[in-house]
Each structure stands twice: as C-alpha cells, then as structure tokens.
Image (cartoon, rainbow, N blue to C red; front, side, top):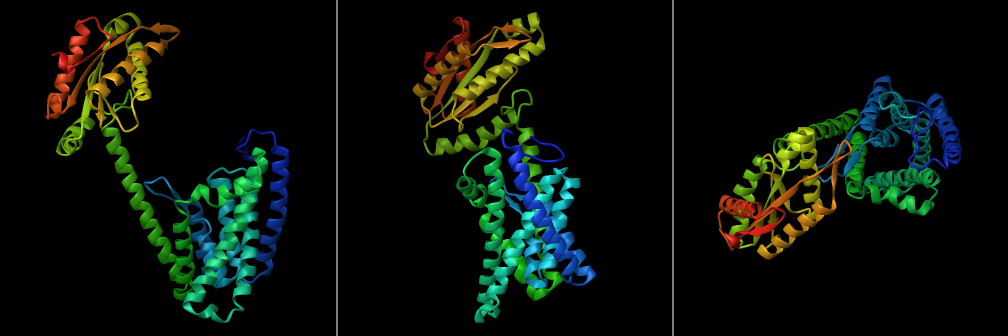
Length: 405
C-alpha cells in the first residue's frame, strides 16, 4: 500500500496499528527535534548550511557496489555534527534532509515524519552515550576517540534499527526479534563494515580538520559514486551490445567472446564441454498463417523453455533467426544428449498461445562435444549444426549427435 499519507509493505491488515505507532513516534520525535532546534545553540550560519547540505546529499546518495550491496550515507553528516558541534546541529543535519524526501522522492507524509522522528530520538540517545564517554579519562587520546565515536554510532544504529524493525513487525504481523536481526544486520551485512568505517572517518576528520574534513570525505564519496555509476553504465551498454533484444539471450557478439576467451581456456584445461544446436521446425508456417508477432512469441517461448532446462552457468545464444546455441561447460556428449531430450520434453509440455490461438512448432536438436569431435570452437558449432540438420531431415523433434555424421 502506497499513498501520500502512509507507505506499507505488508498486506494491509495492520494499517491502523502501523499508522498509530508511526504517529506516536512522530509526535514524540518531532517535538524533541523542534525543541533542540529552537532552544539549542547552533554554530555559525555557514557551518549549519554546510552540514544540512551534506545531510541532504547523504540522504539522497546511495553507493551501489557491483556485488549489489548498497551503502547509505544518510546519517554521516549528523554523526560528525553531533560529535563536533552538539545535538541541535545533528538534529538539523538529519531531520531536515529526511523531510525533504517528501518532495524529492514523494515519500508519504507519515513515513517522512516517522523517519525524521526516529533519527532524532536515536541521536538524543547517542548524545547521552557521548556524555558518559566524555567522563572517561582516556577519551581524549586517539584510541579513546575512535572507541567513543564507535560507541556513539553503535548506540544510534541499534536504537534506530529497533524503531524500523518494530514498524516492519507491526506491518507484517510478525515477531519483533525476527525483523530486528534482519534490519540491524542481515539486510546490510555486506556494507555494514564500510558504513561504520565511513562514519567514523568522517567524524574524526571533522573533529581534527574542521569543516574541511566533512567536505573532504563527501568529495571522495561523490567521486566514488561517479566512478561506480560510470562503470555500471559501461557494463549495461556492454551487456546490451551482447544481448538479443527479442529473447534477452546472448547474441553473435556474445558467442564470439565465448569462442575467443572461454572455449580456449576449456581446451587448455582439457575440460569437457558441449554445444547443443537447436532449430525451430515450422516457424515459417507460423509466420505465414498467424503473422510475425506470433513467430516472435514462439521464439520468446522457446528461449524461456531453454532457460528452464539448462543450469544458470550454461550460456544460451540466439544464433540466427530461428536457431539457438547452448554452450555447456563440464558436460560431455552423453550429458548433452540428455539435456537435449529434456528440452524436447519441456517444449512438448509447455504449450504457447498467441491471441488465444495455440502456436504449434517443433524443434530439431544437434549435439557436438569436446574432446570427442573437435578442439576448434567454430568446428564444434558446425558439427552440432550438421547433427541438427540430420535430425530435421529425419522428421524433426529428435536429438542427434555428431557421432551420427
């Protein structure tokens, strides 16, 4: 459920309870934030603007690594502000940026208020930890500073995760402990160490270098974000250039890369591999009688069937208009023949329809393997092609190997 008042990820049965919980936290938290902002002393105007601006950038900036893990920087400016300038600036550095998401990301009203409130309450508890650690004699020493900053961030993190986990538990009607472990650790275990490292570093640099410290860190983070984004765009363009737009399978460029890079490695290691050549029987009749859109539906359907049969590590290529190749690593001739039979059976069971009409077609399958037949990649494909043609001339819907040539 998503609207301008509340966002929920559950089934909607607990919306009243979720809304009540979020409203109570919002009232308490926003009151606490407002009191600190209006009554607490703020540093100079430019320092306030700098930290709030860094908070807005951090709240809208997510570093996504190639592994898929995401590093969020929403609280980074607030931690530095809390340690170096006090609670009022920390409140401003997290509450104002969170509330801007109501406009920039069209977050629901109650969710925006709740997020600002829970951050404010968590910062207040973190400030109490600072007060306690400042009474320790060694808190001014370098190692002591690192430990104190770590305790500040850990206390914030644990309390903040509790607020989020409680909302998830209410929303989904589940136990709090399950969601607390998930929110505090499981959902971000791959980026948790980086998150702590960035926040500790930013806080200590801001302490020793002043405002230039937080600017320095965020400049580095922005450079990293730009680099990762650029690499992601290059990977996307490279993938698109090697992908067939209709079926989403690899294209001839992808096949060339496999022949020039992957296949020679398999030969050098004397690792068995096989090629399955699949050709559609009757596609021309489908195009003539039902139209080319129906023929495209048949191609897409066959691509789906091939994906369902082969392993995730196997490669599927659209070789021509109605021809497909399956590149099997560590599969010998006998294993490839079994997979070919499975493809025939899966296609027979999975009927395809276009605009309510059944699209009838069959396939012919040819198989060739290394080292049984050849040590040359393109020859392997040609032999699988010839085996496929033999299957087609024998009536189709059959699997023939290069041994039959």
